[in-house]
Image (cartoon, rainbow, N blue to C red):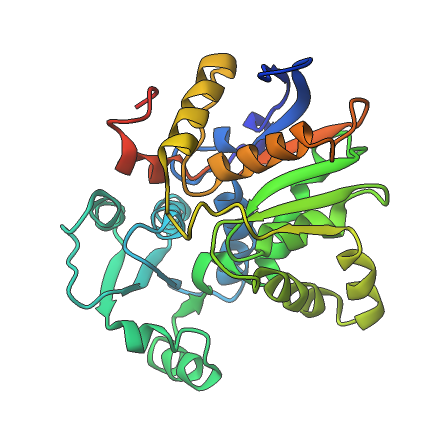
Length: 307
């Protein structure tokens, strides 16, 4: 993939009261229509590792609407590797939705398993059993949540001026957040807007930092720069209301920027809320990282003006 397509844009977003909000956007959504945003960042070094180990393909995990699955399917197809996914929901088939259909069209073998079995996806013994059963496949955790995923995400800020007071991004597995924290400048606060209900994402980020650094003092240092936003999920994962949809449409009208309601729309909403509440100063330099995932917006195609 050509990451040079991920340009840095300077924008001014209209605010109801006061001066427009000026900030930069890292357009990782432009890397590829399918392997977009942080999906390529998290897959890049996992693919290289699979090739270095002479593996036949990639085996991974995901839900029925997973951006990670479709990105893995296409990335493996481009790289000349096979792909296999264990999908949550044994009632499903490859024809169940557009995401699964696309995965199958890219050559991904889909294995549909029960929700109880899917919960074993991070269990060490379960993974050892899978590795023994499929020795020619390199196993990548759900969402690319791995050491190599974090390493790939460190490149995002390295492609910018990297002198920001605030960086905002959406969070799902914490992998992108960990990579951004490791590469951010000392003055930067990294604001992660969790797409999921609950306050567990910081622990996931901490575990990933520990995996990469193997140094508790280093982990503590980087966590000081983390600002978790756990109340920006609009009721839970993939929960959406009219206020959020109207906001996404307004951003598109103002900037021509497409956001999805699951991740990036909620993250920009939280960033603008912080600006309106004075948590971002008028002279502060701010970056929003667009992590892609626009295929997830198609569920609301009748309510979003750009679909």
